Image (cartoon, one colour):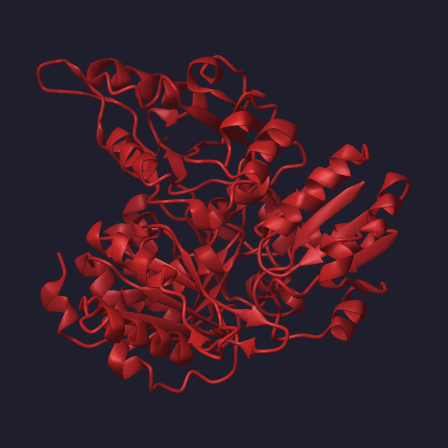
Length: 266
Length: 266
C-alpha cells in the first residue's frame, strides 16, 4: 500500500489528523521537498512529531529511479509532499508506476495554496482563470538573459475574460525561491517590450508565508508593489481581473489595497 | 479573536493538527454547514473529538444577523466550515464585518475540493479554466422548468481554450445534493437545445466522496457517464479540455476512462 499525503502549507502541524494517523501506522516514510517546501519546519521536527524516520527523496529518486516504490508491494509506505498531494505531474506519474506494479494507492489531502489564496485575498475561487508559473530567467547560449513571455500571454487572456490569475513562483534548487518583487519586475520588463499596457494599469496581490500565523497579504498597483518588503519565502502572486465590489472591499480592508479600486469594482 | 478553520473534505479527522489545537483552545465553537458539508461525520462526532460544544449556525445567523460575532471581541471564537476556509463569499463578508468590529481574525486552512480533484483525476491544476456551478432547475412563474445555460457557456469558453472545467454541484436545503448524473442530464438537455456538439463528444469525470477511504472516480463519455452509479454524495464533476498524454493515461488507468482518449491526447 502506498499512501500519498499532502502536508499542507507551512509547518508540521498543518498535516490532518488522518494524515498523521497514516504516517504513524506506516512501515516506511518517504518525502520529497523539491516541488514544494514547508518553510516553517524541518524534517527533524517532522520526525519528532511522527516518531518515525523521514527519508528524503531527490528529484532523481522520484522521477528517474523510484526503486523505493517496490517496498510498497509488501509494506505500508507513505509519501509526503507539501501542499495538497498529487498536484504535481511527478506525483501522478508515481501513482501510475505504482499501479503498474500492482500496488494499491490512497490519497490523504492537505491544504493547498490554490484555495488558500482565495481565503487570504478574498478573491472568489470561481473567478480565477488558468494559472501560470514564472520561472527564473535563464542565460541563452549567446549569453543573453531570456525572460519567458508565456505568463504575460496567459495574464492577457485571463484579463480579457475578466478573470483572476494565480501566479506560481519558481522554486529552484540553485537559483532559489522567486519573490513577488522579482516576479513583478519580470512581468513589467515584458510589459516594456510589448507595450500593451496590461501590467502598467494592473493591481497585484502578493502573499508571503501562507498558512503561518502571520501571513503577509498586500495589494497595490504592480509598479508600487514591486518595492514592498514581503519578508521571507514562500511567496505567491495574484493578478486580479475584474473585481466584484466585495472582492475590492476585501483587497482594500484586508490587504491594504488602494481605495481607487472600489470605484472600478462591479 | 476570530479564527476561521477549514475542516477539509470528508470527516472529523480531516482537520489539521493546527485547527484542532485552535478548536480545543477556543471559548466558543461555531460552525456553518449549509455552504459545504462533511458527509462522513456528524456534529456529535466533532464534539466528541474536540471536547467542546459545536453551535450550528443557520444561513440567517451567518448572513443576516451574525450577532455571535460580538463575542469575538472579548472571547476566543472559532468558526468552522467544510473544505478550506473563506472560500465562500459569505465568509469573506463575515471577515469584513469582524474587521469593522475591531476583531482580529486568523485563518487555518483545510483541504479543498478544488485541489483534491486534481489529485484524484490526475488532471493538472494549472490546466483548469474558470470553474462553474450547476444549480437545481427552478420552476418559473408560468410553471416552466428553467435550466440555466450559464454552465454550458463557461464550458464552451474553457473548451475553446483547451482548458478543464471544475463543475460544482448544487447543495440545496430543500432540493438536496445534486448528483453527477443529474448534472450531466442537465448539460445534455442544454446541448439538445443548442446543438453545438460540445457535450456529445465530451469526456466527463465524476467524483464521489472525495477525501474518504473509498472515493469513486470514473471517466467516460458524458452520454455513458450519466448512467454510472456513483453512490452517496457529495459528488463533483470535471469536464476535461485538451488532455496531455499523462492526463489521458491517468483517466484511463486510475478512473477507468475509455482507451480512445489516449489517441487524442497531446
